[in-house]
Length: 160
Figure 1 (cartoon, rainbow, N blue to C red):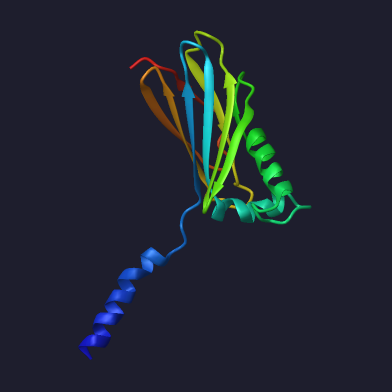
Figure 2 (figure 1 turned 90 degrees about the vertical axis):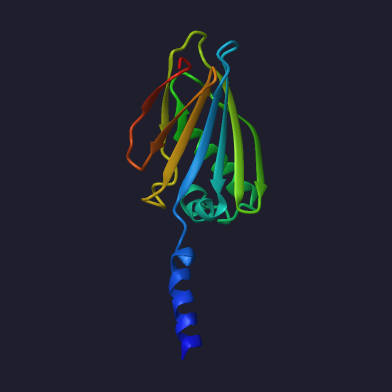
């Protein structure tokens, strides 16, 4: 009896751990204030990306193993994550287990004091998807979050 009670309690305590993970991604923007170089590193979870591939790449297999789907995903991220006035180009992408990492790069105007960011990823598939964006410039990091339907947000650069 005590053993059954203990097992029941352990199962109840483990239930939150077995719950579905939230839908989120991380983008880290690094701005070199001296040169204007901008690097954006996206960290995406394959468990969020693959279901979204059905809409993003309807003619491809909804799998990151399909090169056509991966190309469509790269183009999607490039269209849906934007920095106003900063054209971004893909520099690299890597797949490792549940992690999808994409690196984009561009150049900001010298002396820019802020950065306007638009980040609308995967809301069509995951209405609760959140994009956390960390902006690093001149030794200062600022964080903003985007949810489906959010418009652009402006982040000041540098200055403590």
